[in-house]
Image 1 (spheres, rainbow, N blue to C red):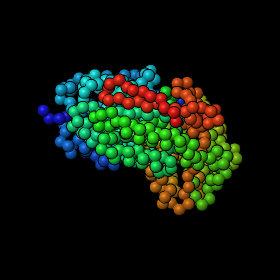
Image 2 (image 1 turned 45 degrees about the vertical axis):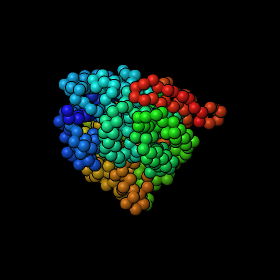
Image 3 (image 1 turned 60 degrees about the vertical axis):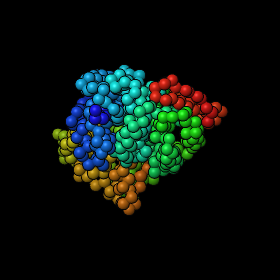
Image 4 (image 1 turned 120 degrees about the vertical axis):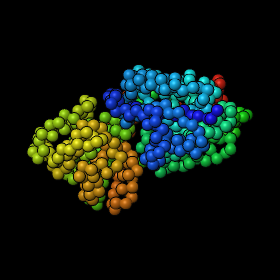
Amino acid sequence: MARRVLIGGFWHESDTFNPLPAASDSFVWLVGEDLTELGDRPAGKDNELAGALVEFGAAGLGVDSLLAVSAPVSGPVPGPVFDHFLSALEHRLAVTSPQAVSGVYFALHGSTSVTDREDAQAEIVSTLRRHVGRNIPLVISVDLHASPSPALIAGVDAIVGYRTAPHRDIVDTGRRAARLLLRLMAFGSRPWKIHIRLPLLLPGEYGQTDLEPMRSLVANVADYTNQPEILEASFLQGYPWADNPNAMVSLCAALAPGPAPESAREQLIDLARNVFAQRAAFYRSTPVLSIADALAKADGRDGPWYLCDSGDNPTAGAVEDRVDLLQHVLVHRLSNFLFAPIVAPTAVDQCIRQVGRRISLTLGGQLVQAGPQVSASFHVLAAVKDSLAGDVAILAADGNRIVLTTRRVAMHDPAWLAGLGLDATDPGTVYVLKSGYLFPAYQDLLARVPGARAYLVATPGASSLDLATFPYRRLRRPIYPLDGEDLGLDWSMTVITARGDSEWETETLAL
């Protein structure tokens, strides 16, 4: 019988401190042939599954596509949406013969929260296992910011994580996962797994892989895999904007079947100790300015300047409707700022009918009543429709421009501003972007535009870099940086070792 693999995915990064659940209509569903056709698209523009399909095709494997569901980062996934997904997954599995399956590859985010579920991602894996059994290799890929639970890791044979942030290796991660699955299918027995959990919370902005210490640490984990018995290893940064007992930094490895991997285990423990030893260095890796310091520094001269409103960052799951920086600019009568974007559906609706006129508006907290509000007179410059942001209004006030939208939009690419007729590289402008670290298109802009500079700004919101402001209730303690160095704590890590789904050996080791 020809070998066949099952593929599918569920991607959602869920900020449990964002009180707005993900919108049901924001989820994109790919089922059957729609999913398989990903492999025919240019790989650089696709996702993990597209990369995996290339590898499976080269190996001559048949592919049965289940379904792949995704939505932009936001608050938690609504329970009914996840119920529908599980039902659809079970339906797709029911028409697939388990005897025809040689392996399973499923792409997950790794930090998905569902409103009425304890461990939704482990449920997905359990659903797959019920169909294919315990002995079929099952590999998942995850985001670098994944927070896998012990139950999730117990159900799979290996985890393959991204190695870059900002993420440039998404397609390549899918190819790595597919190649690993092919190796596991050839073994005929299940691998060893090691999972090390560290008491460390780390926002993504402090784990950029082109900066130290993250650059060297990720490279060290990649080098670790150059040993023949080590099939795969991943450094997973975790996702701190979720009240989740698994939100910490972790390291995962899959090792070839055979004798207990004592040497490889000790090496991974040494890598984990090195990670924790540099915990303070992570928090020094990226300069972060207060609002006052950022506005004093970015005077718009010899720019352009890009200020990243990190606390209201939609790519980390925040709401995107706060006006903390806008309030400071207007109160202190600063000019030459461009704010992009602020979500304000009610204000946009008012502006559509007032293009070319002045209008009094109150901005801030139109989706969630949190943070300051700004009431002022604005000149409505334009109102347009946008495929990503919905209705858009462009305003002016005191020499500044403000982009309002009806939908959340990630500031991935300066081309979005250009599509609105706004120059993203004006040397006299300070751009206030709803963003954390800049994405590759903006980083490329910084490299080629003379005088361009960017700074993270410590602003409040559902993606604040000040983790002490969040009401964690389920997080395992002690954990750095919430529990400081001056408390005389005895830090420890948890090391979990198992083969297949056999009983886990758990050990707590001092750091």
